[in-house]
Amino acid sequence: MKRLIFSALLLFFLCVSGGYAQTKHDRNVERYKSSWDRLIPRYAKLQFAGSMGFLSAGVGWDYGRSKHWETDVLLGFVPAFKHDDTKVTLTLKQNYMPWKIHFSQKFMFEPLACGIYINTIFSDNFWARTPIKYPSNKYYSFSTRIRTHVFLGERITLNFDPEKRKSDSLSFFYELSTNDLYFISAVSNRYIKLKDILSLSFGLKLQFL
Image (cartoon, rainbow, N blue to C red; front, side, top):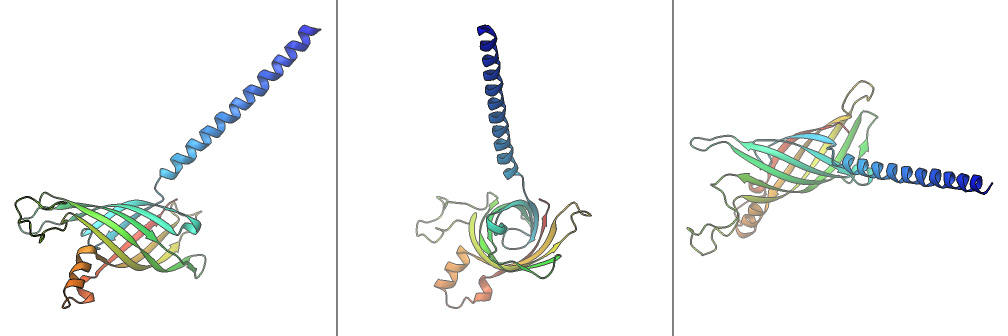
């Protein structure tokens, strides 16, 4: 009788501990899966101009409350001119859209899209630090390879029928931007006007997750 009771208790303990271990394992799997899911890009972007190249393309992630924040990674190119070769650019961009206006189930308008982006160009003709061959009078103290930009713009979005389309929506946007070098030049030179330091760009955003 004692052996029977002991065997029953042992079997019960093994079942409980095994179930707990399985539950813990399932939770760990779900946690890892959730972490990996966050790394999957949520949309693709194509942008023309914007001081990041003639044409740039990349992917991004949206997050936060009501998806007001976005982070983009874009690769662009600058076409060859005369004796120059084609150049590649890399841009890291942070976007913020505080308001969303829904005209209907299909159309949405974002009256303000703003943010900051940093881009670099891959070429030996540009530098992050002033080369030794230039005089030390600080005239070339700025980096010619890395630029920091701020921008303002607007977006309009067409939402697709999820039962008929593989993607969720398509957005058209435009942006007005300027960079640190343009801004410093405008502050130090009163002959430079606002239109001289602004860059206009257009783009498309395809949301698929």
